[in-house]
Length: 271
Image 1 (spheres, one colour):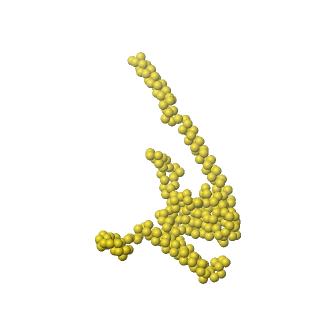
Image 2 (tube, one colour):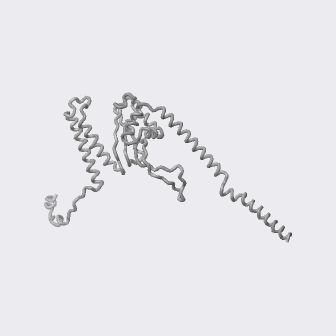
Image 3 (tube, helix red, strand yellow):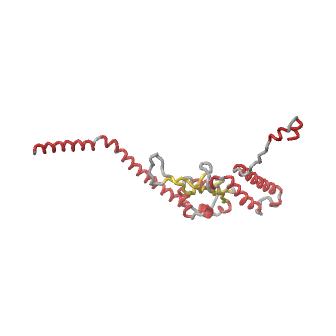
């Protein structure tokens, strides 16, 4: 019995040794390679470094904010119904922040655009799904734009310069105009039509000071200009309604008329 027990013990030792070799062998290294852990650590370190640099950049931009920026921030906060703190954080975090400085510069950008609309945001702690996709959720976001790189589906807030002078804290309210128009669900024509008909045209028709034109609204050129704007809005409205199929053409039974056409004179008369 004792020898038999020892025989089993030897077998157990041999199997234990084989199992240990299998565990520490190359098969486990293939499943969980050391490089995977290294890459994960490096990736984590890189993210921390990027976050650190982003924080430094934000604070540098925050230090640059003066009366000019405060004017823009207050207009945006009032128009979009966000707090000034929220707008400030958004601006200094935007990768197009330099466009603001280019707008303030002498002979700088003529316009500065902001979009406020739904943007797909990826959760920071979201993991990849089985199909390789991530969990993206739409979220309202305010961001600076040049106007041609993103689809416009929400609200556009814009600032326009009235001269080539450098924009300062003392002249920003006189040299910069602010406006907004809505493009909910991507209906740009309707947003532009509303902006022109309900805001711009009433403002122009109530304008008293037309600069060098002393006659003001009585001047024939001013009247022609306002008429042209009114006509453009009318054309814009018609185009929008056509696109939306709001104008239905009456179906006509052409065969009735064609059967009565016997000679060239009938064709001329029908025209």
